[in-house]
Image (cartoon, rainbow, N blue to C red):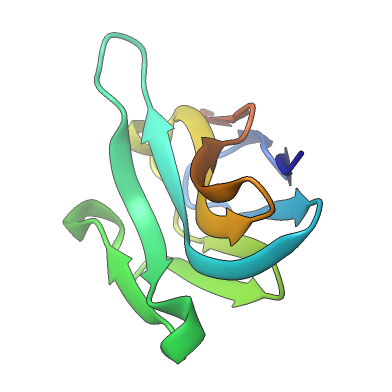
Length: 120
């Protein structure tokens, strides 16, 4: 059974920085895509950043609202989100997502979420 374990959320002041981490446990044959999404209270879950086509080297994709401030990176079956110049509008629960092939076949799963709060 593959699971995603997230860490790194917390409370930070505006213009501060946080780094989120997400690691996939279990046997994974091919990791196709990993990314970060967020959901603020009363809003729909939205893409923050993702890395697609990982077997081919990876292509990054960012929401316009975080371009120039957030950086996504990856290691084997793990993904990270460096968040700089944080704004109150970045406050949300951040979810890791992974699309992969494992023993059960192709799957797309979510992490449990980690709270990011930007406030003075």
